[in-house]
Image (tube, one colour):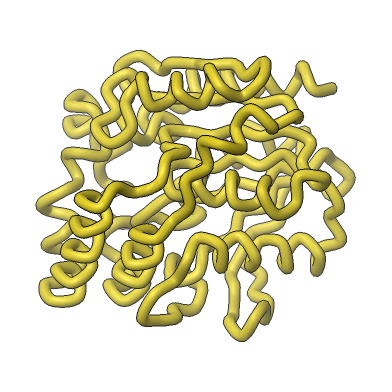
Length: 265
């Protein structure tokens, strides 16, 4: 696992697969880390170069407080790509990671070969949802991530996945090990996140939207808002999956992503 100093922090990441392959940048969601993409690493490492950062405050990357904007996380990734001499890449982001992908497109559209957004939402926060994020941040700081995981993990995956140890156990470990300060700082930043719906019609790179049919947080109509407004975007619904189809239904997810990437060639 390489670690590099970027914008005042130590940022952990993986640089895997084929050094001369087309780069894929996988951006994890909250409250996860880069290991959530393990099934994708195993599937795509023989054909692509895979870049998997731990976002600021998550995994093995430094925490900064009291608040981290998604723009900051996007800038961290840009600096990482510069350090790795990667000029262009396909960006794949899940949930909060999908929102960061849209921030990246706003900042560096010329560096995209493709865009994939998984179980995410291009809209900004409402006053009510922003208040809930701030309240959740304070609760996490007060009671910790184990309690937060116990109370919320059922919202992240479908009922069938809750009964599947191969999904539930690594997810629980990942969520509960997230540092409260990092999770709270990101929640406070997301309360101020941009509304990206206006830029969707201006996206000109090949795009794919993926959503689990049982997603609690960003259900199918939210995914359709993006696929309907991004020109020529595809939409794939992973039946029986919740908010984490890449972990819950990795074969279906990898087939959908792989088919999309092959068309780029």
